[in-house]
Length: 322
Ligand SMILES: Cc1cc2nc3c(=O)[nH]c(=O)nc-3n(C[C@H](O)[C@H](O)[C@H](O)COP(=O)(O)O)c2cc1C
Image (tube, rainbow, N blue to C red; front, side):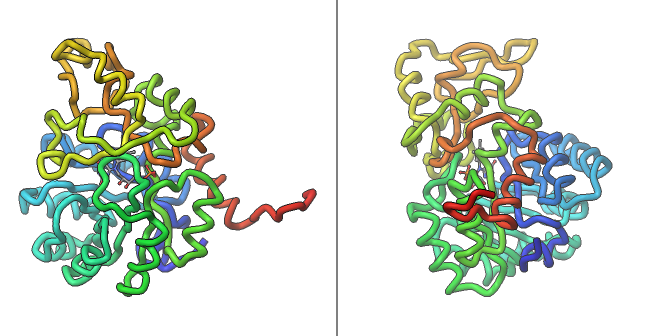
């Protein structure tokens, strides 16, 4: 599948697996990159040496296209250079486009993608030198930058900029993927659908909650802002509504523990439940996009990619028998 995005970054399929903090595990990035999309790791919360080692390990496991996500403007120059030397795409989100950071990533040989929540921000990203812009609709899971529905924002941004544009937010099946491509997007950035894969770092109970979710069952909240650097500037994240309801039932300051050392996870923490968490997982930050209802199973990331691609290459004709 060729689009201006695949041509630019060198992947075979116009799909970027969204960065999802601890959920976007090395296994998930490798699986998506091997399937022809862009596999993504997040810098957030990792000591620099660990991040660089992880990028090297992932790099050694796939010859596919990788990106690395940075969500804080105070990223160290040397670290940004080292990250950009290891991936095809450096991926920024949650702060104003910064020409200095774009230039540094370019100088180290990477392309730059900036996820935006408004048309003005998309223009600023292109003015800052970005090679790709991702428009994030309000339907997106996790931290939500803007307030505009994806289709409206995509249309406006396509009119406003001349770089490849990825669409993000509520794309979780072949139909929605085909729709954004037909609307002019050069690809899609997908989070929630990839959460329900064996390769993701999500706790099995979190994957089950995503699969079981149906209908209009998410909301944007500031309830999970404890220890979250993104919420420090704007506490807006889309989660399963049940998580907000269950949080209200938790009286303790600690909602859960993590790992063999049982490190406490405070009530209202921005950390989603990963493997190894024990306690009130149902009252933790269960980030999920508005289209979570159409995620019907946990299946390998390569199958997710293949299914999305098939929907575009072999669209089902209504009423056809074959
Ligand atoms: C569990 C989860 C964690 C996320 N964490 C990040 C992150 O660390 N950095 C980032 O740029 N975006 C993050 N996002 C937002 C994604 O970049 C993207 O906008 C979103 O997943 C698209 O919507 P969808 O989940 O409906 O596909 C996260 C999304 C989810 C679901």
